[in-house]
Length: 309
Picture 1 (cartoon, helix red, strand yellow):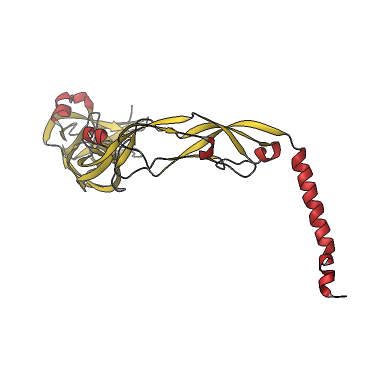
Picture 2 (cartoon, helix red, strand yellow):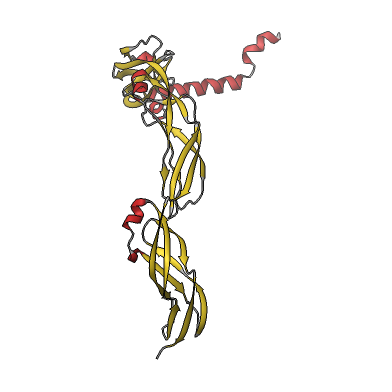
């Protein structure tokens, strides 16, 4: 017997197994109930013409009705059904684009029955660019007695892109605030630059190097004969400072110094842990207002500590 005559029987067992699996699969699918289901699916926009910008609120999703075997629909994962709109024919102005079931991508076995809405309106404007300055700001306050001086940015101007009407309204780009809390010297930070109008964007992703000059406040004021307080004196001790008053010089803005009162400044020496005796101690000062202490005269006083009666 020739080999060709035996060919239909080669791998006979595998062929029977394959046929059985195919029949079982067909029976499983044929036995499943056909159902419909509503889905919220993403809307993908393609081929937006160069030189045009979408304006107004742009929809990101649409509703679809799908039909198929219950098992097939239950296996549909997020993102497998997507509505696609081709905008290559768009022109400036208000335009209406139909959306049909044929424009929805879906897995095999899933039929698109209906799309809602059946048409979507878009507004298009010519694209425009413009160069605007970078607006700088700070966060916090410098150390008492210091003020914010000049602020510079590199780059000082950036190019924005977007719909023509929005570009015409734009006057500036914004840099992140630079933290300067407690600063006594120049502060330099690399910050992100952006625009508040969501219709606009920078022509290229941009950061800026911002330099903030921190300077001593321009004015100084001296409060005379401020009493020297004795801090942390032991309960059974008495003490006396010689001299008992000092002059405290402060630096700040005109407004802060004008509001400053004698009670806003407390000169003191710290006698914590000291017993009886005579001690030369440094005088410090606390200030309630936004002003910095520049000098205390005298800066050292003699403190005599003795036992209380």
